[in-house]
Length: 195
Image 1 (spheres, helix red, strand yellow):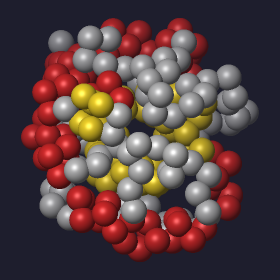
Image 2 (cartoon, helix red, strand yellow):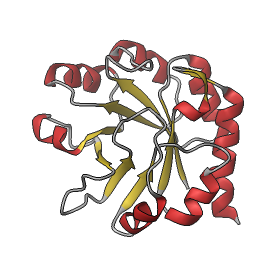
Image 3 (spheres, helix red, strand yellow):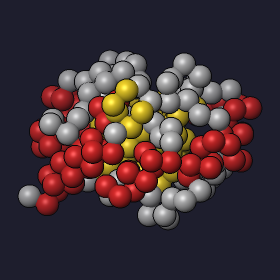
């Protein structure tokens, strides 16, 4: 099970995610988020990441200038933003695209890999798992929204996503990650595939 911990804001969160066995960490570039970073700050936090952990730039309707700064400073492995945003951005071919698809507004044709979440990012909103399970059969879904260490194994069993994504549920306060909660979440998500 691919596990992404989103919303890195300090070195301790990055280290805890790596130690727990996360496959990817997300850096948020959205001014209204308590997890918002400058491209330079994100690049500093990501500088010690092992090659096995992927860097995800997480954005929401970014302008081209901000994306260029992120692309240059962070050099992410993946860009995660709403599907419509990709039409306005020049993305280096070496950077993987993860469109965010939101509950209740799916395109006719799904991308190969996509994040699936509620109408608002970073708010811990759960999606309808029954609906999500049907959508997960049509591509590599990264399930997000409302997941935590107590329900992630059930979500994986019911939805069968390719990956899971968590942010607010592994925090002690908005934007402040908790190492213990990160470890518990990753362990719970990874345990499902071993059973």
